[in-house]
Length: 255
Image 1: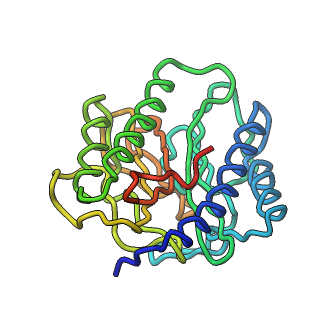
Image 2 (image 1 turned 90 degrees about the vertical axis):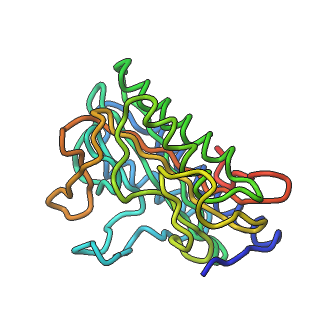
């Protein structure tokens, strides 16, 4: 069931979204050669504490997970696509890093992700990240009243496939509100004109993921959470929480 949010609720979600934006910005600024993934998690945790917010990630345990998620920040490095568990790994020059973060404030949730390179970037990594960001922008542009979920999926998939990249099978965006994951699902590939019609008050987490090697297959790392590309190629992830409004899409997690 899809809950349509009031304008007041969307404003409250924007407040949660801005906590997310601040945490991602702080973690991105802290990321440098020699910094551990646990240190990045602590930076994000500090932002939550300062805002009086809580984490929808910490302790989260969906049906596929062997254990509750142990951190507030997902940090996925190089061939890790999403759900990377922060550990003692220290960032190296040229690492491609994707960070994903959520915050709950006043009973409402925001969720966003970005990718970047630590130190000296490879041209191929910059193209991969830029494609994820373009796909996100295209998905947001399609998130207008009267369109359908398939229009968002088609916009994202066209950018990703057109660049020759893979799209992890079965993973995509989702509705968001009182809970981190709500209806409807938002695939990263699909046919235009299909699926649920978009209405004022719907709020979606739109999140393209791209795999450099062109394949869609992945596997879980031994921690049971981190999803890694089967071919060992690098991946990038971009995400915003977006409200569908009569005035056009409103990005609630804009940095």
